[in-house]
Amino acid sequence: MAGRNQAATKALNRIGDETGSEGMSIAICSWIDTVSARLRQLGMPEANGMPVRPMWINDETEAVADADGVPPAVRWAGQLAAARAAKDRQTWEALIMALPEDPSEAGQHIWALLSGAALTLRSLPLPRSAGAS
Image (cartoon, rainbow, N blue to C red; front, side):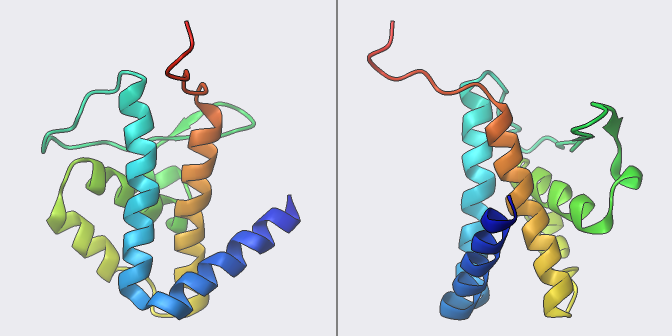
């Protein structure tokens, strides 16, 4: 697992170095949109401008936590994903502006988003292929 984390961190650094904040923003939107699209395929309704409430589930205990029960980077990632899913541009922009200025801390927030998206996708049933019966 450590090797995958290092590879992902290297890829994130490369995205930031080569494309700047605009490229990172596009990548962030893509990760969130991929999870949202997969959830919609599984029956989750569109938010259509309605509020979306994130929740966090502990992998080990399966306990559900609210925003106060998770680390700041994880909270930020969930709230950013919820703002994107709800098409709440004002909250989205406020959360982007709330990213820490310290590159290491900002990286922890981006990593929380990427790993959260990956873990969510990994936990969902595989999509059925078009030719499957």
